[in-house]
Length: 255
Image 1 (cartoon, rainbow, N blue to C red):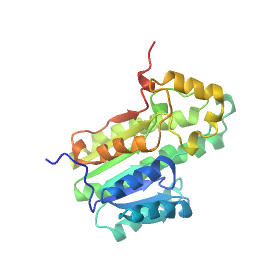
Image 2: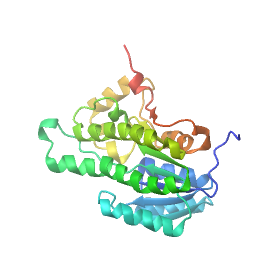
Image 3: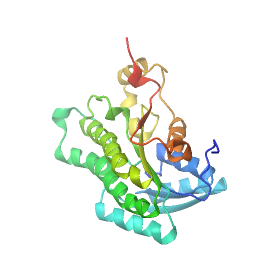
């Protein structure tokens, strides 16, 4: 066995690849030789990600799509299959949040978060999983969060959705291990992305995060990439159903 990360000519699908963590993940796979399929609602931002991959000598294809619409998912996967013989890796990374007290959460808020953070993950896994079962192998990495294992104040829809991702990962790992498909998740802590830009403008909230994080700082998107690459690689062939927390020690915090 070669102890190295090698994705040469593998087809890697990354959702939410237009910015933040997803963009960095996509560029990471591209730098290691993958054919990266980029999915998000923003075509212009996807093209920027694709340009970064191509400028570094990698290969990228862009598919603008709203994955919160279930019918769209089947169309996206059919599109990918028309252009590639296999789907080797799926990274479910799309995500949104609505930060407000639980007493103020509306049904619209709840559905907005759940439709993308949880429902789209399942149906994307289902559609790609069917193809992986046919080909007899595959890797799926779902983007969870520390909010999926501990409660985040004023984030009931978000934490609920990410807790669902953690358990969805376990269920699919259990069902699909017999097909040589490994399903895992990565749970980032507080990473400097657009998702938390407004929240960390509050000095008290920022202090609360950093004071409870042993590393005493926020993370950077690049620091999440390594965990995703590992779980998607042959180095993790005996790892499935696991959520790898990349949080600067936040969930290890004690007194």
